[in-house]
Length: 409
Ligand SMILES: Cc1cc2nc3c(=O)[nH]c(=O)nc-3n(C[C@H](O)[C@H](O)[C@H](O)COP(=O)(O)OP(=O)(O)OC[C@H]3O[C@@H](n4cnc5c(N)ncnc54)[C@H](O)[C@@H]3O)c2cc1C
Picture: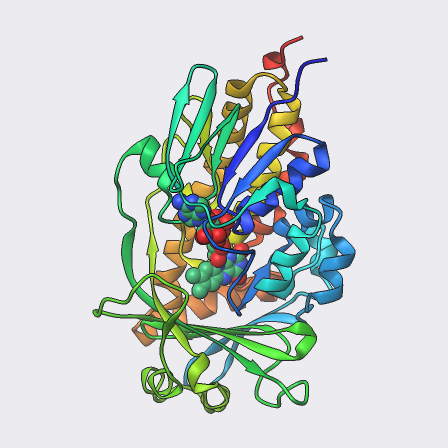
């Protein structure tokens, strides 16, 4: 039997820990390196769509996710000012049957905690920042800010949108400001449900802006993500402080249900930041080093897929490493062949949703709304944001698509 390869993972965000968990499940040795002093996630919600939940289930996390996840009744589209329902797609009753897994709303910290639960302490180093990576023969080496280095058979850059690993492989290429900014806030709920917030994934579409709201923590809080096109420059950070008044000012004239919700935000717990993305890449890997998650394909959050794509990447990479044991190049080729076309489409369609969600003229808005209403007349389960193809994909069946001829015997 061949000796197992050792994998070095840079970054313990959702992508890095999903990879660690996938490798742990297969008994493949790895070590995680994270610049932060401890595991942590910001206090915000996250949507886990059926394609991501299929992977979480395959990682043995179905019960844990179900115990903290919120199952929305539906996905609703609404008009920004009148609140008129533009579409409603049933989720809770239908998604599992149609797409093979549930659609959950979670608190990010809960998701991160569930993914990290079985990662042994000795397999992670905190407070260490990767500064460079290099290929060296049939190995790769990561270099850190404390002067240490780590040699591995494969190094994976799961280090986010400003990835050091990506830069070391492919040169400096700053992510682009998309012209859109975002506010986030969590509103605690005393009595569930609030009369002005439906237990749904609610999308409010307005000119040059949209807002998404949903319950997390079993209905104990509502997550707000409010997006607006802007000429002003906003930092790319989850923790840039804003305020209730700034949020209210930005959404003046919007429907009273939303304004009532915004008024309930804690002034010190409203954050804002600029949204950045990049063009899809033609290649991710070089030698024994590759990329995963936002380091490879940062995207606008309009299909709620950044973390979902990182989770899918992680599972497919672990499957490929196991399947092509001893053949890192074949594993990386299979990984990219499976993942690049998928993430490319999600990146580009997420950008396109920015356009259709933010239409300005009432003629264009009517055309958009009529199209989905006609689709829903034919099929009441048609998804209002045209994302069926996102949810249908199943990363857990990727082995069926790997090229067996490249497995060495
Ligand atoms: C407003 C908004 C809403 C979103 N909503 C959703 C949603 O509903 N569903 C969804 O699927 N996605 C959503 N996303 C996208 C999602 O948040 C990201 O795509 C996802 O978190 C990316 O995970 P990652 O592990 O690739 O990167 P990150 O989460 O950025 O993790 C990178 C990790 O690497 C560490 N690191 C960085 N550099 C180094 C270094 N040099 N050395 C060591 N460690 C390092 C960082 O500290 C961090 O822990 C949303 C994004 C935004 C902005």
